View 1 (cartoon, rainbow, N blue to C red):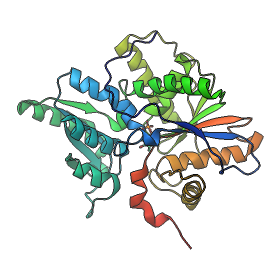
View 2: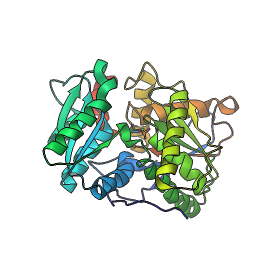
View 3: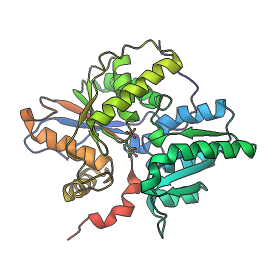
View 4: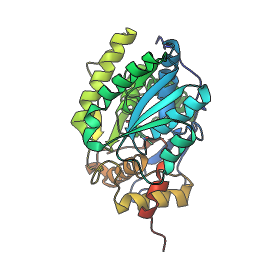
Length: 332
Ligand SMILES: Cc1ncc(COP(=O)(O)O)c(C=O)c1O
């Protein structure tokens, strides 16, 4: 039996798991199911809130009145943290990578509206952001406050619990819907969702493989990052978990020209899914992963999802990241 640490109830759970009705991949009869984590909340939508249920419980348990976290200017994680902080009466200080834009849009607009304090760190100095966060923590202590630092994407041994717990939910979904999916598919950006799913699938015996499409970095990075997080998680929570056979399967080839930059095929697919199913992906995370999944399914036996009868795509949210990239869409 798994001993969960403290957890706050913040997300609207369980999220629905539904089958795509009208969208299909040419020459593939694989059923595509969507786990709707884009509706874990409205302002706090997406995957990050599952992790934050554990991270913010940790902040509370440590007596922190402040959290410091970090990410890109359009970070969904930072936005979710800013909103949750406003809801819980916790001060949120965000370290965002890049220059302050003239007009705040999308997630950044929401960060400001939710009252987060924001420090912009130029990209070339980003390597030092964790040291800067440590200095900030010390400054908060001098002012009589206490701040917890949550790393990029809340992907650490605490945040890992979010998608471990999601696997318990998926197990009930699969039983209720009589599904035996061959693969669970997700976008991976900081590794915590992928890592949690891999660990959770093993613990809850989901009999399915986790395939992740990287939207930053590469397969080697995620392999190392997830092994480290799992090892720290085992130590911190004293969990008896066999991590000798972790299958960390990151499918490369769909990152395009870089993090946050999507090609035309991704924008077209986002529009197609919106038109046919009323489901909205984003160009930074879910659109790229969905594009990867569809492309691999279209390859049939030559693809990396070969032989799949059913796949479950984790819709990890990201809607607010669509708006700052509206110029990528073409309407004739
Ligand atoms: C919408 C969305 N999908 C997927 C991810 C990737 O999740 P993770 O950071 O846990 O790898 C993120 C965050 O990075 C995200 O904001």
